[in-house]
Every structure is written in structure tokens, then in C-alpha cells.
Amino acid sequence: MANSREGLVSVNRTELLAFYDDPLPDEQGMNATAVNAVAGEEFGLVLLLRYFADSGIDATRLDGPCTTGRMRGHRLDAWVRTPEILYQVEVKNWSAHSFGGTHFPLDATETAGREHRKAIWNEYWDRDRSTFVDKPAAKVLTRMKPPCRDDRIEPLIAFWVSLHPEGDAEPFFSFPLRNGSFDHVNVFSMSTYLRSLTLDELELPLPKTHARLTVLDRIFVRR
Image (cartoon, rainbow, N blue to C red; front, top):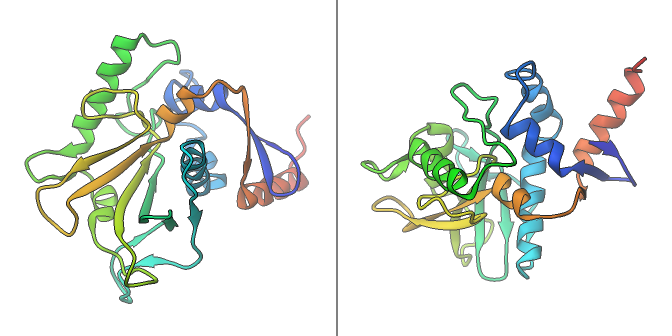
């Protein structure tokens, strides 16, 4: 990532996909936590908003916390409003760097890609309990307190990894739930979305990331 105009950051799409989905042996397990700390949640939300814009849907991130309204309990990353739905959103940047993470090369065949996406979904989803295996992901299924009672609320989880219950290369999909506060969960895959694009570089509004990179540039000088 490199600094661009104020608040904008240019992102090398291919390098980002290679770093998160198919890291080199000497990168495995290294630097991913640091990169997530610099961009992470903000990047996932901005990509989600860009996906909505590409789909012709006007979407905005709301100010304020996404919580149950209690002092303690689950907290999600953001509210994202579209004309018809208010999404309670959680971002998870789990990737090939994560413990047990699976590599997904950029030149994977269509068959390999389908098998990968289906395998990752089956790894993440507990079909017996109709919820995500990991609690940090499953909390998205807890109903949050919306800023307006009249809003139609739906859960949306944005994963880095490319995943789909049928193996399809579909960046955004809904999956039915058997119980709980919602009848379905929406899933967005950053990797699948980025793989669907053709641009070498994306210029994204990442003000927090921009500010952090500016501080790093001011402190550290590479020789």
C-alpha cells in the first residue's frame, strides 16, 4: 500500500491477494498481524461498500457503535445502511497466515477454486448447530440494537477468505439459518471479490490506514 491523495490509499490488488491467500514460505505467519493492524477492519468495510456500489446499491457506514445496547456483551464492527436493509457487520481477516490456513494460489484452476471455496465454508460453518464454528464469527448472529427501531436488520459477516457452500465464485451470498434471531446470514468474501476485478491498483478511501502509514513514513526510513 502507498500513500495517495488525502485519505486515499492505492492498493496493489495482485500483491494483496498473493500476500493473504498464497504467502511465500518466508512470509508464512509473518507480518499479517501487523498489516491487519494498519488496515484490517477499515479495509474490509471499504471493500464491502465498493462491492455494493459496483452492484448499484447505495450503501453507507453509520457512525456509532454496533452493540446489543448493554454495557457488556457482543460488539460488532459497524452498521452499514442500504435503502432497504441495515446490516450489522463483522469483519474477519482470517487468511492463509492464520493457524491451519489454506493456501489459494492466484492461478488456481476453476475446479480447484470451487473445491477450495466449498472446503473453507465447511471448515467455518457448523451445519449441526446452524452457526459459525468460531465464536468470534458466530457473534454476528446475535441481534444488535439498531439506531432506529423501524430498520430491517440483517447480519453480514465479511471474511477475507474465499468461501461458498456450493463452491461458487460469488462474492456476496445469503445462507439460511434454522434457529436464532435471524432467518439467514449474509456473507461477503473479500478475496472472491478482489479476484473478480481486473484493475491492477485500487484507490480506496482509507483515512485511518492513510494516517497510520503517514506516521510510519515519518518515523521509519528504509535504506
